[in-house]
Amino acid sequence: MAEHYDIVIVGAGPAGLAAAEAALGQGARVAWLDAQVTAGGQVWRKDVRYGWPRRVESIVAKLLDHPNATWMPQTQVIAAEQNALLLQDERQALGVTYGALILAAGARELLLPFPGWTLPGVTGAGGLQALAKQGWPLSGRRVVIAGSGPLLLAAAATAKRHGAQVLGIYEQASQAAVHGFARTLWRWPGKALQAAALRCELAGTPYRCGSIVARATGNDALQLIEVDGPNGVQRIECELLAVGYGLVPNVELAQMLGCAMKREAAHPYVAVDDSQRTSIANVYAAGELCGIGGRDCAWLEGRIAGLAATGSAIEASLLRQQRLARRFAANLREHFKLNPCIHDLADPDTLICRCEDVPLRALENFDDARSAKLATRCGMGACQGRVCGTALAELGRFPRSGQRPPLFPARLSTLGDLPSPSDTEGLF
Amino acid sequence: MGMNQVRIAIDGQALDVPAGISVAAAIAQLRLPFRRSVGGQPRTAFCGMGVCFECRVRIDGIAQQRACMVPVREGMQVLTDG
Image (cartoon, rainbow over all chains, first blue to last red; front, side):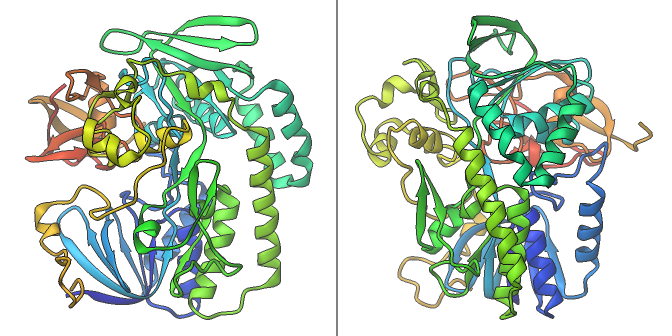
């Protein structure tokens, strides 16, 4: 039997939290769910040692206590129908129906293949930050952070706080581009402050621009990396390498619902109007799903979506702040554009599909994801192409194929609740 | 650190770890490889946020659990194939 809510919110990062707060403030009955065990999303992930930022802790506490709010941790959407979702938590499948749905599923990292990227000890940049906050042992470990964007600084600061010896941060963007970005920061004073605080925390940690990790080597785990920079190739011994080339929106559920998409370079994002409404009347999207915009943008758009979904007025100042936050994101994207040579790091033997161990060589003769998948199993594994499909799209090979249920690997007992194609009675 | 400890077992080996850490973080106290890929290569947690499925292990009899998504619990039995 499906429980009904006025508003269901998928994702409990800044956008989801703001949406929940706004909708509850309007008297709505709200269910909010997240795949993780605690709220906060990735950017506000609770650190097992240091907790949440204080502001986040009080927001989450208020929502958890609210009599009209139902918090569903460790819960993922497996399938969707009109005004209904099939969910799966740690124990069971459950159905919910909604008056309005707010999608706030955030983003994942853009993880790109290079020789050695499957070695234990190589992680994403945000990936290392997430693992550090989960209690991953970093004390005394030699860590290199690489890839692109301000997330590298945040990851390095978290790693240091957890006792890592951060040997260096290697940014692919040129020094001119990074300096150009720094010169625009005065327009976003909050961001300038954040950058200054990070710089303080990272005093003494080398930050090198125009540098790309070209290769990682080791036997059963990472031992050595090669960094290609303005002064040639540098070899660095380390135990951990964290590489992230930015973020991509988690649009899978929105795609399955049939929401109209737009595209930023190779990656789709959800099209919304000024009130965060998607092409489906009672489905809203906020934050990274609508194009990578960062934490502040996610918070503002979550609030807008929460107000709009409850039929409430949206203050003009909120919309003004949201536009300013979007301009910051566009500015960031412009300055941290990826150097195209990153697309050519993988050699013919580099595995592209990590789930099914499919090397680049095996994909040479395909120009669409579906035929490549049928012939090579590329994208057929547990991650359902979230890593390799996104990487292949970024590399300009072929776009990801469309999304079909289940959205995540599901238990058979959960799948038993899925309707057959001929079933017109609906999910529940 | 003053954190509560819980006792879990990883491949039969008892391990005391701080309460609240993830199973992935607990395994990493012992060693890096968590599993072998279909081609036999060693693999470990990669994305840290439940997207890549590289950190899959068996937890209390249930296979294919993402170790980065599950916090440790007292008495938990973790089986890797690393």
